[in-house]
Image (tube, rainbow, N blue to C red):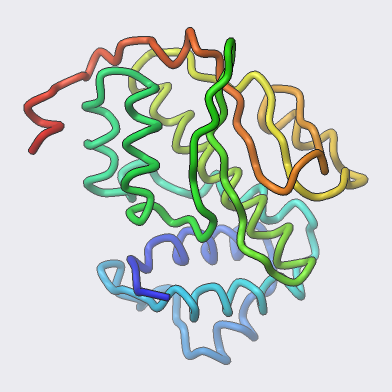
Length: 216
């Protein structure tokens, strides 16, 4: 795996610490001091994923991954933020996000699934041990939702999901997901995450559309 910005890991680990999870043993094992990490540094993706796997093994809250997505900052995506904001509409923003997905903090692979009335942003997760799998699926799901929601608030447009599909079997705390995403959530239907959005919403013009800035 290649390296990438360490910001994604910082958002995740600081979020877990704020949620009351004991991540100190893992941080100590890897010599990580969250207060001293250079936010401009890069980290090997394989090492970052290894840290997440070890952290996931000792999480107290099964919803911790879902909650960490709320700690990701819109500005933390750097140039990708401006790239998305200057798109003509939500459809173009999704296609651009897929094209430049290496600028995100995802480990899974993004793709697009068109439909007659609604289309889906599809995220194929990486294979991991069970606890780490749910932790990363929830984290990437929640982080992507946070990015879309932040764009929605900044643009004043409605791009909410019609429904969301999650690849693992329905957990005991499934109701928390519908509350979090404010839409129906289907578990275990297919092996990918899917955000279904109406095609009408995908055509909403962005007030910040700027072809010149976008090209730059």
